[in-house]
Length: 249
Image (tube, rainbow, N blue to C red; front, side):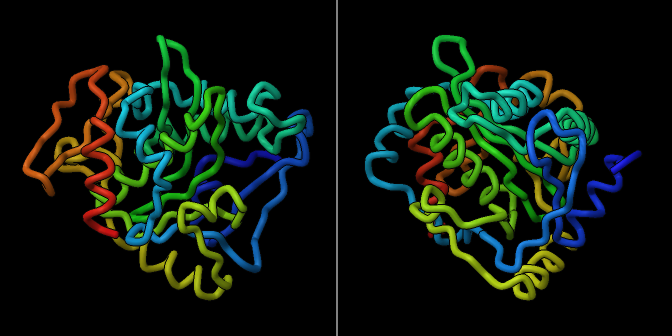
């Protein structure tokens, strides 16, 4: 694909398709339109007991949009435990552009100041499309996923798309639905608004100008009568994250 822009990428997601590359050094992209689609029902997200203990321990410092490009590069690297990757240079550039426009976000896990896990995805309306995750420490990517789901629930999202159903994702409640069903859910979700940040900055449901630079980690605990400050470096406590999830599942 030549001259593939961020706007073209957004249009792909609106139509229910997404780009991939055959290998990290392959310059070509192709569009994927799965016959069956993996989604995580946000009202039925399951946190395994052992993972819940890890989340509650706050072993990792969790941030959002503090290191988007670094997360993408880590997802594409061999160090993340995969010999090959579908994330090539063009995908890196395209999604970094989406992030700058407020349509793509990351969640990071840090330990002793080092990035040890995380994930990234695309936001459209009240839909979030999970793209990839990586982990250099046990459970780091899983903790990032739990924090992401709490953020999506609190922000009013209706659809969490995982693209495919894997054994790894199945333990969290991921299900597989037919393409036609997915497209109906997608249409409803992208016509609504949701906020990756809560409360929404300046009344907007997108990214704020300061949040990415500061590594915003705020979640509002309205469900439990607690509001977390948007102070840089202040991670949402794991106990609050789990409470936000369990109160909706």
